Image 1 (cartoon, rainbow, N blue to C red):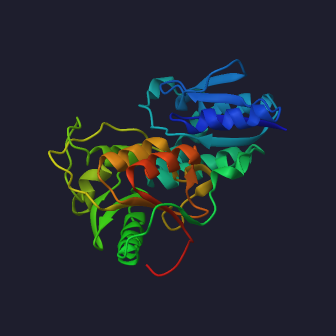
Image 2: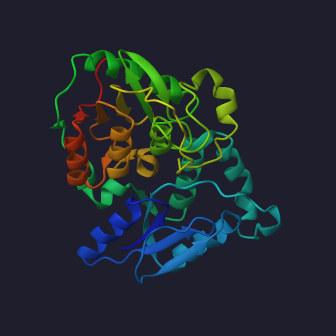
Image 3: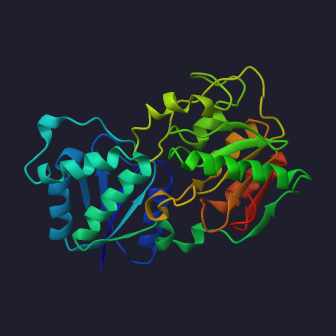
Length: 307
């Protein structure tokens, strides 16, 4: 069985390649031309543009690809209508319709197109089940206000799901301080760090969601520019990350890693809560060490429960 890995940016694609090669599998690495991945090494590679997506599908089937994983941060590249080829032209109405439905609608459209070619779409955790941590407190002590904070966070995510925007929030004392947008979790946390660079921290942007939606051109959340803050507006708060209700987890499961842990510590947070079975943990031992050294907790919370 031949697996294609559409590799975005960040540490997840290199990790998956390492796991696969350790057990003797060599994936076909596929990269969007404008956004090369950090995957290194000699292995089959395909560089493609969305304007030639139909041709890309034909190449995959010609190589005997029957499984496919999409992993890493991916931004929707600018489209040049003049570069759309004959194999892609019949797919344009469907792709446009998917793009109009936001990130999740876009992803579901691409999944359908792959499956129609007999290619099974699997999640990163299907390659490495160890990415899904066991339930429980990994490190640190939970604060007394944890239930109120989690309830506020889950209610915020349910609201965010209605506009398909973000997978994480920062909360304190039962109140939302800031919500993730299409720039991603690490960019959100960077905006809470003193001395950062960028556009600055603007608090909870949800009341201005109409403006935020104008920039939801990403078909997966990708890295953004860090923000700035003159002080720590989120000191003592917690980061809560979980999939939105109904989110397509095969290609858009949330993930945290060492960078998230460092950003959380720099922002003065008290800890991180992620949902078991719905958030991947990259380099768990490094994450634990970073949080433990700074006195932050990490709780892998059972899914469900009261919002």
